Length: 405
Image (cartoon, rainbow, N blue to C red; front, side):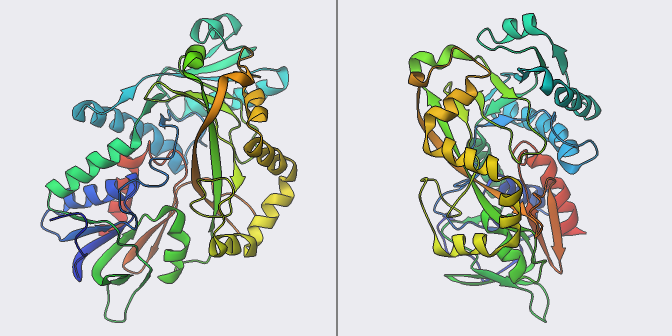
């Protein structure tokens, strides 16, 4: 069966969303129920078209997340499982390590908190290092103290998504590209009806891993009106090929806990390129890979959501700074140069961009943890921020548990 074939009119389980998480869920479901008719519906003409292929490729070790949260537990577990999977499938994987770098005394209490979290989360090999060891690990980096996470890695999440798809199809599942789920409802007769341009799919159960469209589909099924997805565009710079050796692995700043992003950092991607970024700016479209792209429906939904304005009032200085960094790459490069002083503006060129599906409540609070909502015969992933790709195999188990309960 071709991936472009029309979706079936009926199946046992439908999975909406062909990103890395939707594919991991479909793969997990068919392993558990090999006789079930399971189909996966993807709106684009290729898999992993959005967040799964528009990222830095970092496999997180679990340093940042609040101990006891789903993100903390599933990140550590998921990274270990993903490492093994990539080895078995001969997929790209490089243990590049990460330095979280404090450049001033005011950042040390925050670095202490990250160390506490990392230790509580069981991050392997995590240790505190001083200026001399910083220079040994990353000769161009400068700081007064740092956390070194040697287990942080980089990979190709789009390639992993493709491997998950192959596993799913080999086990009997079907994938249908160009099949957007326009809406979904739970009829009185039971199950879930998913409406696509090619007709409706009647499923006994459905799982929605719809990323940037997750809120709309959840509400159409009778789910909660919040949180709302607000698209956050992240733009990167790249180092010119003759300057790519400036950093060996990943160099991150100590994040400000009052801000909803990590700040400019340097990441050596799996292909050897060196990225700087990302920025974090509310976007005018849920597919705003171009800086000034606007979709009237998307922008209207963002502007009508009270949480958008509450967030911007709370973080107006940071919002202006991120907008300036997005429009003027030299500002972003200078921000990264606080970590690596030898970085010059002349060394950078424009890089890729991605759009993050950020769940935001009515009061303007970012939903920090993974959020899975059950509505009748459907399960909706309402929030899957980083490290969702890292956690995909472990998070898929949790979602499958709830789907088959």
